[in-house]
Length: 149
Image 1 (cartoon, one colour):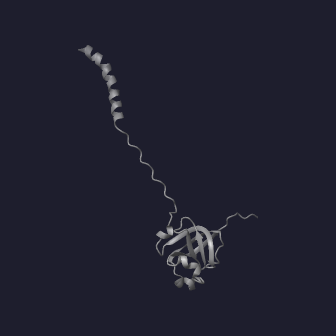
Image 2 (cartoon, one colour):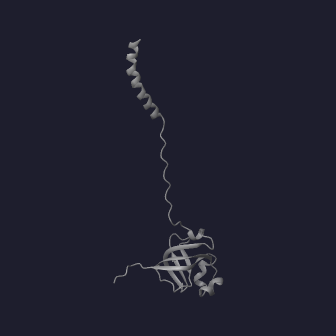
Image 3 (cartoon, one colour):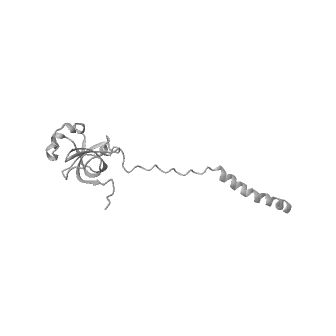
């Protein structure tokens, strides 16, 4: 009987790693969870999602100056590509200057806002009528080229 054990010991010793290998290979390993795609800092349509009264900061290029207190900025992240900015501060920047405007989203009505912002005739504002505008509290104009000297 000892002979049988002596012959079986090497077989049993070899069988243990085979069983462990078979069990390890038959269970699928869980694939790692994919990372979510990063979200852009500025989402398109920011002004469209903003509620009247929300504070908003926009950095964009000046496209058109209508009066000293009203100008239009253009940026791909804006709802329709453009936004009317109303200001009671110093005169408006000139196209194509880059500006950062901090202000409050307001409903635009030429009749309601013409006197406060000295808007002039209604013609240039027709495409903004009934939409939203940004009443600026602060306008920062950025230099495109560094100054030397």
